[in-house]
Amino acid sequence: MNVSIRASDFTVTDAIDSHTRERMRQALRTFDHNVIDADVFLRDISAGKGGADKRVVVHVRLRGRHSVAVEATGDDLYATMTQAARRTRRAVKRTVRKLQRIDRVSLRDLQAATDADSGNAASAVGF
Image 1: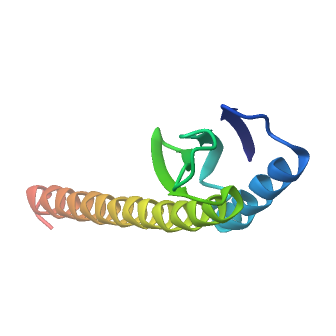
Image 2: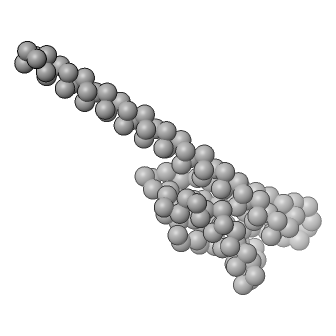
Image 3: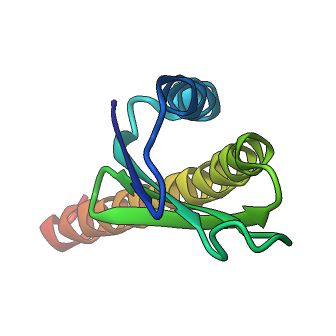
């Protein structure tokens, strides 16, 4: 899984980079076969004026043209990244489960239609 990290209004240090990659790896390891890549956008909103000024936006692309976007804002960049990773894990889990339910229902409908067609063909022949 490819994780790209972009920052605006500050530079990404090695510590920020490793923390971000580790949190994303931990959050998405269960869904590694469903995740194509993740983009992490870091921003210092008020650039030193105080308050909740660190924003982390995570965009995850999943197989099948699906995607998940998550945002977190806080005072500390590391804590905000951790919060964003937790939210990302929950959102990806929810989306993957939803897609699995849709696949099961579609498969069930397909099997029912196939069984109905087989039954109709057999009765048309006179069995």
